[in-house]
Length: 172
Image (cartoon, rainbow, N blue to C red):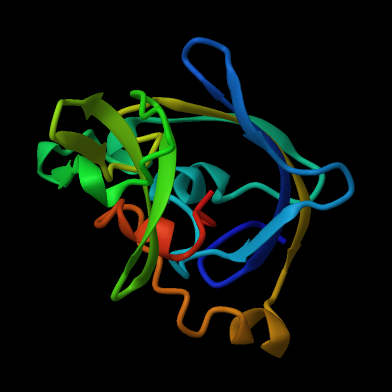
């Protein structure tokens, strides 16, 4: 069976950046699984998987626009420094999680000023070209339990990169 919309897919993968740095990978014996077209995976990866069959391997390159999007300046926010614990030595690159009405949102400190901290709510991989080395371990029709896990996932990294933080970053 070939991968197409509405099929259940399980893949083993290694995700690298242009620099060659590995930033994510599936655990041995625990492939990442999803239903194609359900919004669980970035569009560029789904597009690259279509037509593949169980047992096939591929390297799929995803441009930023089809991945986690470009860096968006509107997702930078100044937060008063006194909103952070006083015993922490704040530095650019530090990651935090804040509660929002939609649930937890992750952000990274991009700048520390005397009275404010600039928080970057862009997805950590926004603006990056992604390289997936994948092996398709399973392709089949979805079962009811596969579809049940989709209810309320609400993650759409392609149109709202900040939503990935609300679903635990589970958008591959």
